[in-house]
Length: 404
Image 1 (tube, rainbow, N blue to C red):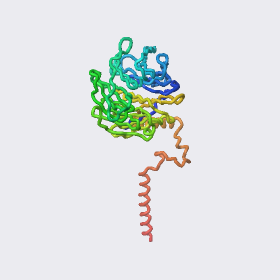
Image 2: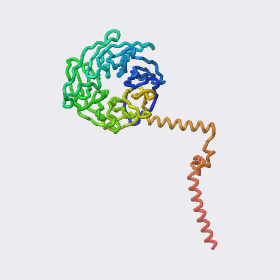
Image 3: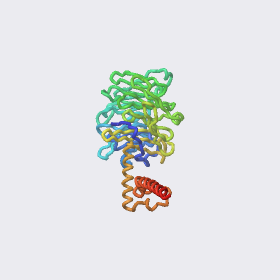
Image 4: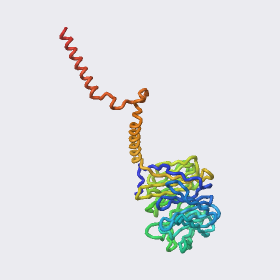
């Protein structure tokens, strides 16, 4: 299970650096959690090994599509395909096959492809580019064919005379493939029925900068332009809670937000190098993860390995030069870790005692030194001496009185 137990605390696992030279814009884990892909404004797509921190593959996507790479998805079933969206409107498919890399791209939109999402099977994809949303089906040789151009959303009380701007796209991966959820900066959240090209439901909102959905698709969390993070119930639009930080409110940037642990926790980025983990039911902060310095953290990804109870978070900086890197965080059970640490300390102390002797015996002049238990006067002996002294004193007193 992916339970967010209070005893779980995330700690740095590995730093992935020395590859990207400009902002990292998107991250995606492989389905087994052994690898992670990153893409950035330098036009590079890097595939990393989580265990070693080594860059296994380095793809210069500018050969297929000049300009920054903005979005990224890793197919979670079937072939090892990584799909990335480019600033020039292209979608690039990168296939990893026996350490061989093949890439091919096509022009999908006239504007930057900032958002991508795959259905549970890898043959359906939805893309978002500024005001456009398109649904694609994979054909022969991984060529994508457009099957639906999603209509623009209806006006709401908050969107009067505002431009349509897409901020995320998601497949509603439940029992069917006939629904996608699109969030808009000013037009709220719309669930579209792909079979009849109509809106199933709409949640009007004043601003929606980024979003994520819980695994059972019962709730969603959004980040707003005002720096708040709001959790809503899907379908009804009922707000569950709101949480924010002073730094987020002052940032005035689109900050990433992501459900983890099957909807039991939320992780958010920041403009000051902090990654925060929240309780989405109470809006309370659980933990703060800190990058060195105060970089903008605008890319997040997570992985949950249910059978191994392994949990990973990846956060990337939106800087340039040496300040550009990806940090992998791993959840550690602090209760087990504490017991393990204690056992290791006891074992180490015993080993040192056997090898060098008890170091405390050479430190009796230290004011903090405490005698070993076996060198202390046992309590029962001390009590015996006290009682014996009292009896002896009484006997002596009686003897003196008798002599008088």
